[in-house]
Amino acid sequence: MRYDFDTKISTDRSSSAKWREMLNHNSRLGAEIVPLSVADMEFRNPPEVIEALRDFLKETTLGYAAPTEAYYDACLAWQRRRHSWLPERRSLVPTAGIVPAIFNAVRSLTEPGDGIIIQPPVYRPFRLSIQKNGRRLVENPLKIIEAQDGTHRYEMDFDDLEAKAADPNTKMLILCSPHNPVGRVWSAEELRRLLDACLEHNVIVVCDEIHDDLIMPGHEHAAIMCVADAGEYDRLLICTAASKTFNLAGCQSSAIYIPDQQLRERFCEGLDQVAQGSGLNAFAYVSTTAAYTRCDEWLDQLITYVQENYNFLKGYLARFLPSVEVYPMEGTYLAWVDFRSWGLSSSELESFMREDALLFLDEGHVFGTGGSGFERFNLACPRSVLGDSLERLVLATNTRGIPST
Image (cartoon, rainbow, N blue to C red; front, side):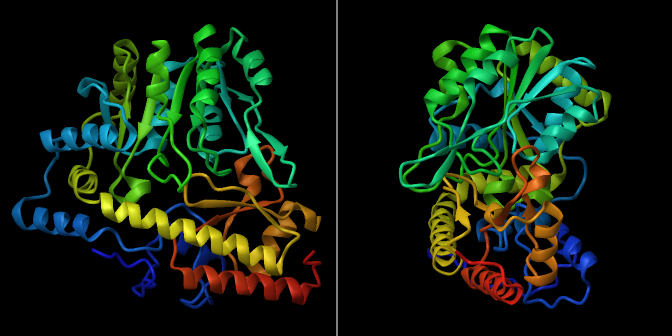
């Protein structure tokens, strides 16, 4: 079956979070302006998931839900089939999203004042989970490396990481793998070095793998548990979800794998303390089960389409705005684009994008240290939407007299 990623969604989108944010900023915008910000898709959900939800509504009631055998089987089989590892069933803890799970891990597995490492520029809730729970933010910024051809990519700063992990007050590291927003797919060797540093100093690793299904052709995701098994390191929480892969964030479902029994018990106790341990909503289990058992082909076609969108973006900007650099997108559907050559402040760049180009992106500065001057483009959209957005960007650049080279 050939799936349609080209047709623009024409229904009212005012209930969408990213659309609501855009319309709150400028209520006069027409439907032709599509936000490329929050990381959900401008594609319809897989028809197999919609069919499963319709069948569910026809046959049952919307009472309190519990995970089914089919749900557990689907989650475990997906990891085996797509990522070459088989978690133990007892290690799986369903939660209502990865962000709540990370907040709970910080709250239940560390103490106030403990140091927690993140690797900015990185997904903003990592930082918030630390600050809002009274823990100490420890930054291990990624390094930009220039290749011989003048292009750039990000790498981990292992010397800095090892020094910060060695601090006896450092208790946890929150890892983004693949990395949002810079698009790196970490190699097994990189993950091994990170785990070695954490193992030596007894640092818990919370690994957000929500983008692990969204790997571009030519790259391979190394599931951290596969790497960890080789070193018998189990002080890990592996955070996964069907939500990013199949555009199901509204169903509020994630699967957190915690191999260590003591950590798992503490994590679950933390959920109970804030009344999050009583199960997910009725749609969460059904949508996840359908996605993981019936939608492999949809995902394969999606990845091809997103890769083509990335190639389109990179080629378009190279032709019309060569002063702007598009960083490699090895994974995710989020392109990290460098506008620092324009010399604009973060507020000036944001104002230009929103007011002049009518582009609603995720601003680089919200990802913390090293993010200023960048913009994150959501490429999970019809190519016509991306093309219209880039045309507005080039037109606004010419109107403002910003040098294109």
